[in-house]
Length: 333
Length: 200
Image (cartoon, rainbow over all chains, first blue to last red; front, side, top):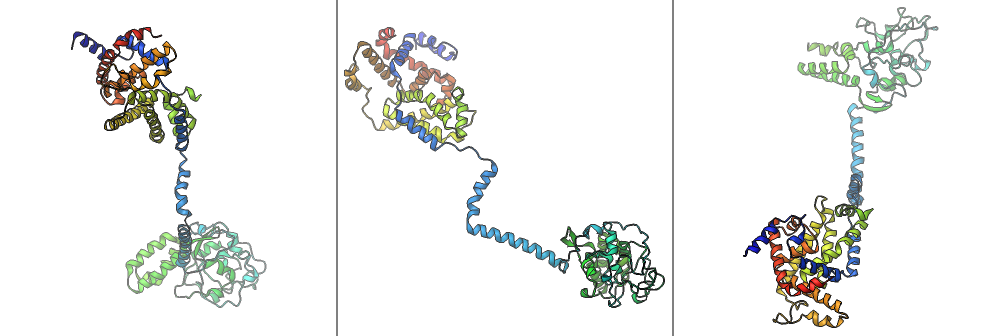
């Protein structure tokens, strides 16, 4: 290596791109390259290459990225387009719906009975009882607002626990009292009211009793008399909620009750806008009471206490009025 | 205007399915890439095939292209790798080169001189033709490493840093290769120094 080579090396190694390239290469050689390029040294590729490349570019052009839902649909389309898979999916959906319906119907053991277009029962369960309102005097001895067709003189005398009304309903107390058309609700309390007796000489039978009518109350047949003026001074809901049970009394068969009462009081499922949503707290409480009686007979007082706690949470009024006073439950205290 | 956009922007547009963007890219780079390949491999037909393959790889790799990468670096890396592969393949299957001397005698003409010699109509054309042949011969006489650096530097006007990225060697190595390439070309073209000075 000569000194000139070293110098050239140094120039090249220190050369920046901003420098004039002519500094590091011979100017004549660069001029020669420039002249050659200017006189057609650079060649053009054949036009067919361009045409081929453009055709390939069109064919292989990346597709614009679709939104995620479109990509998901693209992905799922071939899968769910297959008849077998589509059939299986339909089967799963139908089976699932049927299963849910069956379970709901099976849990409460009753058919769904909708209480009519009136307010749903479920909303009334936890509502506080309405204040006792003085009822207007009955002009003809009949229970106020009770339709004649509700009155069932042929109803056999049964103790008060035919079917206990549910707790007070704040939404439609009037309806509960009056009964209304086809939706008696809790008004089965007044289901058997005599139409005779001035001033409401009394009902010849009272299907339930208020909180103040405890065990000392006479049987239903004897419950009438002059101590009733044909009106009920309590709100129907309140009456219903506080009516004590008589555990040993069998329930009246459904078909022997007033139709309206059957519709309303025995519907053990909660409804929301007419659509059953599951067993009502009252129905659950009744089931728990039955279980508690069984447990009490088996001397399983621990289970009875557990059920008592559950009932108290579910339906405090029912607990106070019925569950806690049940002899079988009391035995475990 | 699409034509004013950078290579990288055009590539991103092509990623979005805009074929017109690729058309502009092809128009910008087809000639430099073709001449780079042509000077590298010395054969026009092979150069066209390699040009086609280069842009086909760009098309197929468009979806994976990241905007951070400089498009020309990517493009010339593809072209250079194809040229290197082609040169290595050709070492095993030697063909008669139009630019190679037909005999061992250095002063003997090339095959191209014989084929195209009758086409020269004027002195200027003859001088240019001789100049082209001599330049092409001088470039072909360079070693592969020096040739690629020289072509990228002198014909593509690429900075040393970018050449280093394409070739995959340090920048100083690129400069050293450039120096040796110039040295050799000076020797090869020394006889044509006067001709070059006379060139317009």
